[in-house]
Amino acid sequence: GQLSQSAHLALQLPYTVLGLGRSANFLDHLYVGIPRPPGGKTLTIWREGGIMDRKASGEGERADALDVRKQEWTAIIPNSQLIVIPYPQNDPRSWSAKLYLTPSNIVLLTAIALIGVCIFILVIIGILHWQE
Image (cartoon, rainbow, N blue to C red; front, top):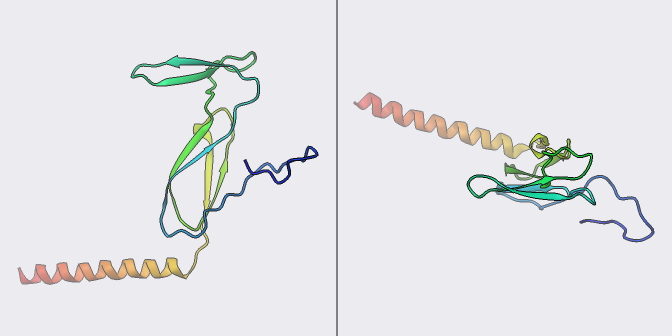
């Protein structure tokens, strides 16, 4: 992990900033996970199809709380900010991700190019339809 200080029992911030730099392509997969609590015992259960589940079996914990606490997001927009809120911690399917995109002139130019291509295709279709 990213520790700003590893001596004198420093209190770490409750978030991590991770940068990929400027990228022109979408991020295919982003995996986010948090470690299980210390002392948590696990029980391995095999389901049909050979899929393995690990369930927590400690006292005071829900029997159906999954041990693996990670979530995957796909197709993240480049040059954007993604904030992941891992709450509730024991239910990764409920975690939310907020994507913040700073609009720039490139977004406007992309929209204009898309509209121009659509108009060009419509003109070609219209000419071909008129000739028929």
